[in-house]
Image (cartoon, rainbow, N blue to C red; front, side):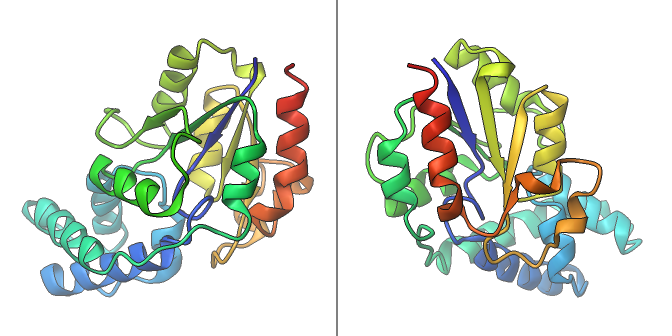
Length: 220
C-alpha cells in the first residue's frame, strides 16, 4: 500500500486568498501592522500562533500579549467570510486515487473539518490531521510522521503534495518525497530553490492527476 499526504489550503481548495484577507484585517485591527501577501504565503503551514509570532519578529513588533488576540480575530473573520471551493478536478482526482489519502494542515480543526465538508466528497480522505493534533507545525515533520504512524506506512511509500516552502521542508525532514502545486499563489518557483527539483513543481493541482494515479496504482 502507498499513501498520499495533501496540504488542504492552496492544494485541494482555493482558500488561501480568504486566509490572507482574514490575517490582513486581524493584524491591522489588533496591532496596526500592514502585513503583505507574500509574508503570509511563505509562512503557510505553520500553526496559527507560530505564524503570528513570526510576523511579529519580521515587523519588530514586541507586544507578544497581542498574539492570541490576533489569532482569535483572524479565526473569527475567516469563519465569517469562508466562501471557498475546491480547485478544478480535485474531487475527480481524489475519487480515482485508491491508496491511503491524508490531509495534514496547520489550520484549526474546526476550519479544516468545515472546509472538507463544504468542498470535498464524503469519505475520500482517510486521515485528517490539523493544528489541534500536533504540537509543532511545519517545517517540523511531526504531522507527517503522525500520518505515517496512523497509516502504518514507510516514508518511501508516501508522496506529499504541498504549495509552500515550509511544507516542503517538513516533507524533506520526514524523508518523504514532495510535489509542489502553485495554483493561484503569489509564490514563485525560485521560492523553492534547494528544497525540491524544479521538475516537481506544477502550475495547478489538476495537472498532477495522472502522476498521483500512477503513484497509487503502483502500490497494487
